[in-house]
Length: 258
Length: 321
Image (cartoon, rainbow over all chains, first blue to last red; front, side, top):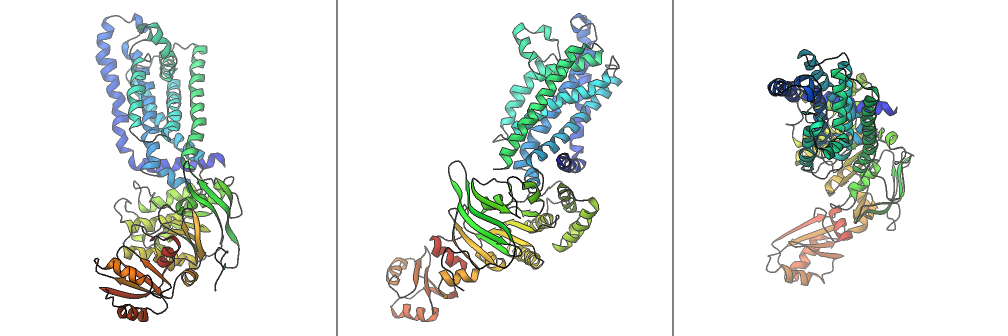
């Protein structure tokens, strides 16, 4: 019964998505392709000339591709958990329509989160396939990089949705993109190794979810899996997801049951 | 039939569907609903009449189980809205004040998606959706996008959507606000048919004609409290004279005329910004009396008392202010 109500909400998101999926194809299909091309091959051709010792002895493409995977997951999470959540109260009123039915705030949230996770899994699956096609997948473990990246996305989506339902105006989201996502994307061991950062900044990076997601994806796609380290990453990302789900149950109730 | 003020008015026989005692809703710095008592019975159409900000919508949200009461008792279909909100909502239909249709979807898709929220089987939803679109006269628009539909058509679609679970109680928050007169009459007609079928209607409105058209019983709400309750006819009989003489004077003499008429032998005199209302038994006789007193209005109108007059009497304000 509990889960069934969330599934009703999820199905409604699917119905709407079948209508509007075309609008998201451009960024989902071509976005990561451009990143892989421009960074992996373009920038990569320069980087490779200076040797690959600091990259752990792999080509820049192989180094940067798992980061494109994890940041792709985080970006999809951010897009799906900010404006669509806020708009479901203010603009499209999807939540307002749903709350008049047997669905409770928690069902509305879990249904939407399931849809966000599906969108993240779709985009990360596509990037994983690109990696295979471009020779950036160096290990059979790459198959697990797909769920690892999806978990990274979930660890972003749940807490962001919990926050987005409660913000007063949508302009607040600009701060998240500018002061949250932007530095995370640049300084999480994504485009260059953390060893290039000053020590104190490295410590900050270790605390962020994108570093955990990127390091986990990279270990898998390069086949350098250190099990305890990988488990710490998974535990961190799972804990952050759980925290978001716990918080959202409260913020959704607070916002919808006024 | 007359009742002492404040008593619970004559009620239809039958089962109490909604019961409230001392129902209160407070927000941070103001009290929206201030300790109201009522019983709503199966099969009746019950109206909450009042100006904006009177507490009507807050009351509707509490009955709709999406707003926990701050204090007091509330029972809906015999259950507690805070604990059993989900089960109660499965038996309610809600037509919100603002449309919440999904404009990305077609007319019929809106019904299909909404039916899924109630966990109804697809086949049943399809059957009901077709019948409901017939009922609100939208069958020929089933495949159309919702966005370009007029306000009246959207409202009818919202009503069809609210009926997908065959609710026992239909809650309508200002169902015709913003519609043109013709569209309003279509909505009233459909709501009247629903009532004939035995659906219990709870509605808010700030239109007295809507309340007179649809409601068996109503409460006049002001500042979060009930100023009066009864059937439209009871309320008019209790709080208004049989006839009302409306006089409009040249603005230059409006104030002096108002002074003179204050002592006129009417039951009551209301001086509005643009008109003077005399509450009397015989409007024509009163008009003759006004002329004998040497006052010549620009226009005069004798009409029957309405809920608007009741409201003015009870609150000193006009409904649509």
